[in-house]
Structures are given as structure tokens and as C-alpha cells.
Image (cartoon, rainbow, N blue to C red; front, side, top):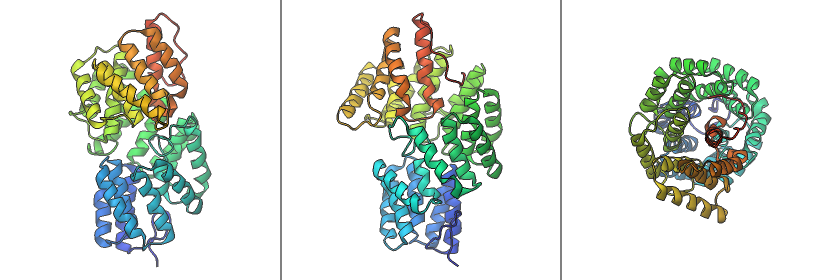
Amino acid sequence: MVPADRYGLPLSSSAAARDAYVAGVDCVLSANTGAEEDLGRALAADPGFALAQIALARALFLAARVPQAREHATRARALAAGATARESSHVNALALAIEGNPVGALEATRAHLAEHPRDAMVLAPATGVFGLIGFSGRQGREPELYDLLSGLAPHYGEDWWFDMTLAFAACENARLDEAGSLIERSMAANPRNPHGAHIKVHVLYEQGDHRAALGYLEDWMPAYPKQGLMHCHLSWHVALAALALGERERAWHAYRDGVHPGGGASGPPLNVATDSPSFLWRAELAGEPRHARLWSEVRDYGLQSFPKAGVWFADVHVALACAAAGDGENLARIARELRERDAAGKLPPGAVAPGLADAFAACEKRDWNRAIELLEAALPETVRIGGSRAQRDIVEFTLRAACLQAGRTPPQRRGATT
């Protein structure tokens, strides 16, 4: 009997390698620890297992170990020459993303899914707010992802990974009842699923239920290793929920212990470099005093992790850190590099990214009318920089604060509270 993965797709490998591969893939799909070990066991059992090789490349890529990821992707491509057409297509779609070709990767992903809709590992990189669609820079990327997943739903049934993935897309499209039902079903099937816990908290955030979000995470997180892929970001959610509830000491503890670079943070640079300035800024908007040393450390981490503009969601947050740290030189450089990329047609979100950098600079100069002008222009297109609705709320919160400082009526809140 031919071994198959958890979705019933045949694998050109042994049963022993298959078992380790399935375990490793579930770690990748859920953000649990252990993926490298499981996939290493799969490759030890079958060194020619192309899908285990590309899955390991994907795990390394998610951990921001890009050079290593690309080495494994190259090996997977070589191994795929002896694999089935489905496996070769699977390897190609994942490798394109790892190699830095997101447009080609999404095209290959759509073509692959048309033939193999239950290939979850190929679908996964297209999903979420940092995926191939989420980072496309397109204004309509949220409904685009929801439509893709809705069309695939009949192929998955009650699968814990697909339920949570569709739940996040529904949440980001303000379909909260649907999102809530899906994520509850997902977590009932796989309670120790970090991505699922994250999405559940997003639904609660959008519902404005910060007490439930904080309570849930405080129960769920102690068993999640600190080196887990989502630990930093889940700690950010703890800090935000506590801040929204006025529990300032709890918020700062979560921040220092799990989010701040060089302290407790453990996670990909994209999370640390964006979540840390996001919390510090939102804390100030909520009335907390400025912590100059923390801002300097956040600025230094951001500049080290993203020395040149090009990862626009990170760039906007590093620009914010530069503004708050009083680093006008690097702030101006980031804005300039973003404009140069935009002029060259190499900045998918367009002018909204440098516009936000300029807006944060105006706030630091207390030029509230200029800040309002820039933020009002950016707000309708902020979706293009990527990230979740919760993450992008920083733009609206800053606009409201600028309006209050200028003695102007702030815009009506879109839904969630802080």
C-alpha cells in the first residue's frame, strides 16, 4: 500500500518516513516546536524524500533562517526530479516562495491547487496576513484570500488546520460569527495549536472582549515553549489585552518578558521588529510615559534586522521606532528608500508605506495637522502594507490621538476597542 499524508495524498517514500513527515508537517502548519526534528527523522529514514526536504526548507524559512532554507530548497528541487508530477509541482510552488519569487509562487500555487486542492502544505504559504496574498500589496487582498479558501472548503471537511485558516480569513473580513464557529471547531480538534490560539484571540479582539482574550492566553501559553514561532506575537496579544483593560503592570510584564528585543523575545525578526514598537507606541497613546532606552533598543534591533527598506510592513514599524528614538537620519533614509522603490515599481503597497513613515515623523514633531493629513490619506490603503486588522489599528489610533491633540473631532472607531 502506498503511504499517504494526512490529507490522503500519496507519498513516494516509506511508511516510517511518512509518519515522521506527517508529524513534522503538522508542526509547521500549527507553529508547534519540533518540525526540524521530525523532518530530520523523515530524511534519515529516506534521504531521497523530496517533500520532507522542502518541508524542512519551509520550516527554516518561517524561522527566518533564509540561507539554510534556500539550501534545502535546492536539494528538494534536485530530489523532485525523481518524484511524481504532484510532488514535483509541490516542491516547485514552495521553493519559488523560499527563493524570493512570491508572484511566481502564487501562480504556481493556484495552478497546483486546481489539480490537488487538498495539498495543505502548498496552500499554507498563500494564507495568513504575511502570506503570498497577505503581502501582495493589493488593496483587495483580504477578500481575495477569503474567496480562495471558501472555494477550497468543500475539499477539507472538518480539518483543524483548514478551519483555523479559514477562520482567520473570515475574521479579517469582519465575518466574526463564521470566524468564531470555525476557530472553536478547530481548537476542539487540536487544542495545542499555536496558530489556532492566535486566531481565537484575534476573533476576541475584534469582538472587543479583551478580558476573554487575556484569560484564554494566560491559561494556554504556559505550556507553549518560549522558542515557539508564535510566542513573541502571542505575548504581544497578552500585552495589548492587559493594556486595554487598564492592567498596566501586567501589560509591561508581558512586553518585557516576551516581546522586547534582547530581553524575553524569541521569534522571527519580522514579529519582534514590528510587535515591539507597536506596543510601545500604543502604550504611549494610552497614557504611558516614554521609555527612551526601550525605544533605542527597539530601533537598534529593527535597523539591524532590516538594514535596507524592502519589507514594507517591517519598514513602517522601524520608521516608527526611529521617530520615537529621535533618529531623524535613519527615518529619512527609510522614507527615501521606500519612495525610490515605489518609483522603480518595486514597492507593491505603493505610496502608503513612505506616507506612514512621514506621518510618524510629523507626530514626533508635534505637527498635528500634517500628521492628520498624512494619516487620513494612508488609512484607506493601510491594508496594502500587510498585517492584520489588529496590527493596522495603530494607524487609526494614531490618527485619533493626533486629532485630539489638534482639537479636532477624531474619526469614529471601526469596531474593536483599546
